[in-house]
Amino acid sequence: MKSSAPPEVTAPPGGGEPEGLDKSVWATAAVVVLGAVMAILDVTVVNVAIPELTKEFDAQLSQIQWIATGYTLALATVIPVTGWACARFGTKRLYMVSLLLFAIGSALAGMAWSAESLIAFRVLQGLGGGMIMPAGMTILTQKAGPTRVGQVMAVVGIPMLLGPIGGPILGGWLVDDVSWRWIFYINVPIGAVALFMAWKILERDTPQPTEKLDLLGLAFLSPGLASLIYGLATGAEKGSFGSSSVLITTIAGVLLVGAFVVRALKAENPLIDLRLFRRRSVAAASLTMLLFAIAFFGSMLLVPLYFQVVRGETALTTGLLLIPQGLGAMVTMPVGGKLTDKVGPGRVVLVGLTLIVLGTFGLTQIEADTSYWLLGVEFFVMGLGMGATMMPTMSAALQSLGHDEVPRASTALNIIQQVGGSIGTAAISILLTTAMKDRLPAGGGDGGGGIGGLLELSPAQIAPLLPPMAASFAETYWWAVGLMALAFLPALFLPRHKPAAASVDAPMPMH
Image (tube, rainbow, N blue to C red; front, side, top):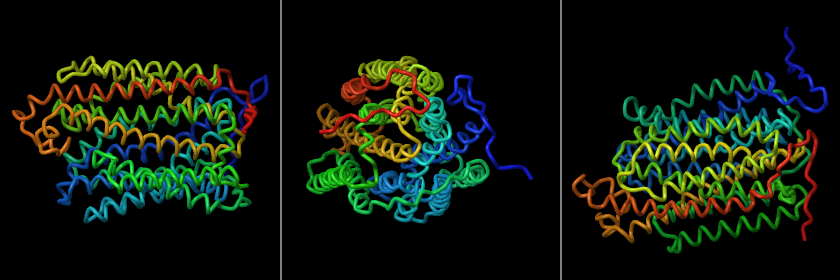
């Protein structure tokens, strides 16, 4: 009988950890990436299917959109507890439970008989999906050690690329040629393989049941995040944050999150240890990530809308046109990971942000007949920047932490990215809607129906509206450029040196 102990890794002559990734790290990375691909791919696949689901269940678009929003709300609810659950039950056990929940939710969603049942099963999916990424990042970061965080973050970045590239293409093909149900069923065999690999490959870790769950903090943070995202999503759907229901929900979310912050700074064992943000690298990385997520994920909302509304392309063609962005990220992500470990994340992130700003600036000049070749170059440059920004920023925070601090920090960074993306999507939606209302008669000639109504216009009706519509997209991209430029400020404070094997940043004084 073979031993299940992990293979030994020979340390370099100078001591510390090996610089390369050994077989055991690669095996662990394969398990984590497979689960992450499943969770992230699912989001983009479902977005493509929303028009088909509207017809299938004879439902309003505002109702069907909750298939995506309900999933996001479930993510926001469960992510905060992941750090505690990793310590209480062990990361391997928690990761396998999250994969199982996601696969079960996927199977049930594929069997949905109504819009309401599909939304409910998507929430179950989200409860599993919300734990997959933070638990997976914790497993991989702890396995690799601080000197190789940049390289493993580059590996975790693979699903970030496959989602935007493969999601629309896979979803378009399944919906058009197979069945919408298979956008969910496809997760079941992938989940089964991921579960088996996790059971065989991941090392058993020892639970640390000493800390009690911060129930009061959970009562503040999870409903607060859910309320905040609900308010943002509803405001974006209505095209305004002026209604009393949207304002009340959003403000309640902000107040609950604020109450959690006060609680976390005073509690002995808080749900998320905000004292980690006293370290300059963690604070700078978190603020950089927040601004990056708001700007980048918000601007990425515009791309498929431009292709489908202004250029009249299908969802499948839109996915194909986005391939250059994924290719650009594939070029810089592995290089950025290695450079992060050798020279520190600060320099890498500044280069990445510069590339994203340049690519996004090109989109501020977009017109109704802009060359697809030129757009492809701009998407490629943005991809180069994304590959050198997202994972090095994550690495900047995690490199400075001790082994037991990683789960809490990973959870916090995932929350920041999720909330930032939600804020960016909602904000950019409002800005685009406002720009179109200023330029188009009656919201685009459809009685104020907005983008949904524009998709129903005939070619002859929409032709004279194309130039002002394109100008609305160009104006909105200027906001994205400005938001992305703000991310340079905290990025200037990211570490610009190679991380030491066991170094931990000294905390900054708090007054």
